[in-house]
Amino acid sequence: METEKKQTREIETPTNITIKGILGLIMENIEASEGGDSKKVISLGMGDPTAYSCFHSPALAQQAVSDTLSSYKFNGYSPTVGLPQTRKAIADYLSRDLPEKVSADDVYVTAGCTQAIETALSILAYPGANILLPRPGFPIYALCAAFRHLEVRYYDLLPEKGWEVDLNAVESLADQNTIAVVIINPGNPCGNVYSYQHLKEIAETANKLKLIVIADEVYGHLAFGTNPFVPMGVFGSIAPVLTLGSLSKRWLVPGWRLGWLVINDPNGTIKTPKFVERIKKYCDICGGPATFIQAAVPRIIQQTEEVFFKKTINMLKGTSDICCEKIKEIPCLTCTHKPQGSMAVMVKLNLSLLRDISDDIDFCFKLAKEESVIILPGLAVGLKNWLRITFAAEPSSLEEALGRVKSFCQRHSYQENGHC
Ligand SMILES: Cc1ncc(COP(=O)(O)O)c(C=O)c1O
Image 1 (cartoon, rainbow, N blue to C red):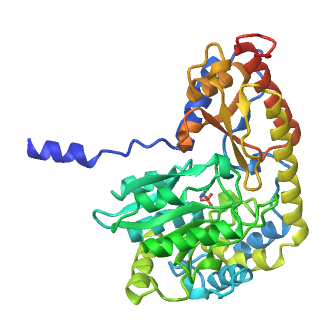
Image 2 (tube, protein in one colour):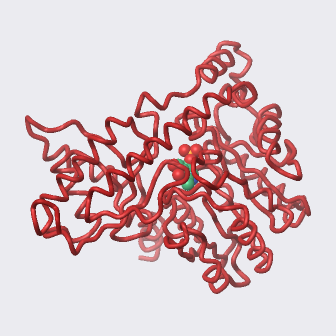
């Protein structure tokens, strides 16, 4: 009896919603209902721009990987913290924007930013600890915390203040067992880019509360609004920062699984020998990304031309503008804050204008079934009755998809012409 009970407990899996999980269900729903005259499926659900040919990785990056692979020099294991030249290239890249440089030893190479998240949460977790996460946010944090039995406390992002962190909430949520506060900048799912001043205030709050800041900068440099991208590491001397990032978004290679966790702690507040030992041990478990991909990183970082980055930024600015303009034509959707960065925006759903839609989940399932357009329900990122729209798409597909959303909303409005 005792044994049976124990086994049942051991196979329990966290019940958190994941983006992939919910999009998978929506997709199944389309497939189940597909008839002969079905429309082409357009997904504005996933943050993977490579589905569209206008978001192409630089040719140089392909060449660099192809060269390291065919050299036969990188078929072996790499050190689990990453190849020395890869760590150095990432340290030099990040140091360009920092007042106090990070060294190669501060960099741990991970399998995408996802593994950097997992590493950060795993090395910080202890029984009874908690972590502060943004709402809306990126659900992998809560899922990872659940696996590590780390209590999650959500602070709100404030839509009326450009999705800034509610610092009062951070102060009231934190206690002596709070290990860190997570920020995502540029933001997913909101498309916000924090000002220098706001980031400084976050660092000062963290300092007051003795928290580490985990700065998810997977969308680093993908900023096209008024605020330039400022890395949180700039404030590492106010509060210790663990910067998480990857090649995935800026270089448009999410499938290459090349990320990093970097310690920005010039005062040595957390970077004790014990802490470093703990990260290294954890890296021994993870193993990190393929050696030949790591070996290509120095060339990819050093030789990618500015024009490639500018092209992506211009493209994202253009598609975010299309997205906002099209949303303005749909009465039941409101874009409360124009995106300034990343690849996604949160849009508010006014259900009182819709006749037969019960919530954001119902909206997305019916939309997929009727119009073959996939959008992420806000609930998946923590905000019920909002939608997350990814605008990293071919302009023509985006226009087509949002045109279909408009028809869908008109059909489901109290007045069919959409003037509610
Ligand atoms: C906020 C955020 N963090 C981390 C990740 C994971 O990044 P990677 O694909 O490099 O693992 C993503 C991916 O979309 C993300 O949006």
